[in-house]
Figure 1: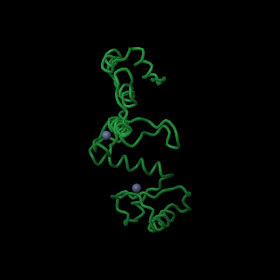
Figure 2: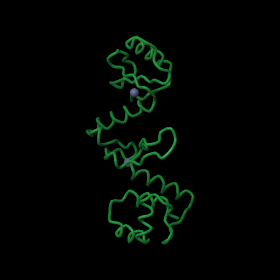
Figure 3: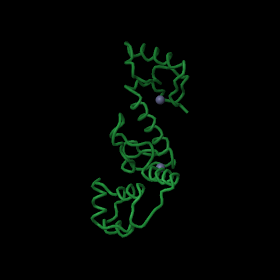
Figure 4: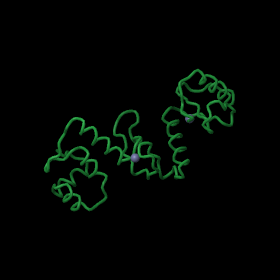
Length: 168
Ligand SMILES: [Zn+2]
Ligand SMILES: [Zn+2]
């Protein structure tokens, strides 16, 4: 609901937003409907977003609010449908969205990697860590020694993984 669609109606939003703004909208600008109703083009219902990333963020914040969360400290995960703290999302490392959180929470990200590895048939051996293990180790706030014991690797290995060094 209220999802941004590339339909013919967008022209109309833009025209109304431009009239309210008193000048042309930047090319990359998106028009957001506050109440989620794409038909309600009353100027008070329109928010001009500088680009699609900003528009996306608005929707993420609205979803978090709608679930009783605090959009400043929490974020809604569309995969497990829960509001979780922002720290529970991995950040994108590269690309145009670098330093923006990925769409799903850490738990769901790891779940996806696991499924992906299952698809390629990677088998878990005692000494070799999978990418999912590495993500779990990085996300863990348990003491290094406890994590090392859990994954049957050395403390040094765990520290190296947490520092983001090679883990193979
Ligand atoms: Zn919107
Ligand atoms: Zn999740």
